[in-house]
Length: 400
Image (cartoon, rainbow, N blue to C red; front, side):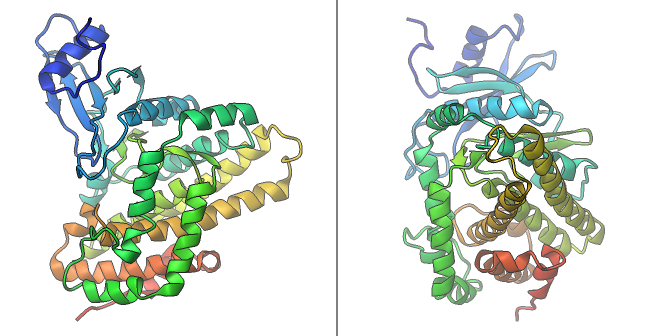
């Protein structure tokens, strides 16, 4: 039996042998394998030779890296690789090339984006990218509309939906996004002493907010609109001046289309708050422009795809298209609010906020929490404001 015909959790040495066994990328040069993953779930190895050629190997363990409490199916990497292939069929320039999906070793071998930066880090250090808003808006429109009932044949969608079912990671989202930030029922929330009174009054004690969150959770659990990325934040996007690449869709499944749109908006707001806190008004203005562009490009491209590609004659109605996009935008506002809340209160923080000094961090956390609450409770009212920034600025605070 070959060494790689039965699953085991690989280390660097095993990954080098694995790549040699499974691919013909490299010649006889000595290989170097380095574990470079900084995410919460999986192991990521860069394998390279002396000529600078390299690939990425993404590999699943039986528990999440963030905590052994999360016992997961190792098939999550297989689903991720297949989802990248599906999304890549619509936007090949916005996803890494997948070379191999190995169902036995629970691995994906893919293009190395070593010449790109993680978007979160790049934005927080003042970098800007001329095509970012258009690229993200196009990614959202192409992946969400092309995997919806408007475009996919019902049998094709149901078959893909069955293949992409993702119960363990959906459960993590149901807990960390929709439940724990409002109840701390598993005692995993991480809240500073100075923020705790605000969390108590703004979240834990607000029963009307909890009703809105429950309604959103039911949508997440039941609304199978499109094949979503499921964790589309600025740490899941790689960029350089000429290229945008979306990675890490391990949380993907058929869910509400607004989930991906809302996640993008939420994390760009974290970047905006970071730039504000650093008094970098140029960067703040740039990020504001990107957020507006994402929403505008998504809407215009999504409507064009609906008009051009809707398969079912009974769905091919202008008013239906407009209503569908409005509902996605509404859901996106709710999701943006939930994502902001959970990243401030819950288990997985963002460096945009944690890197701030304690007093400034508290001010931004309180402002963001108030802004997020409004989005969750009043998503329809958010549509009548000139922009989301006018709502955000309404909650500017000075905390003693």
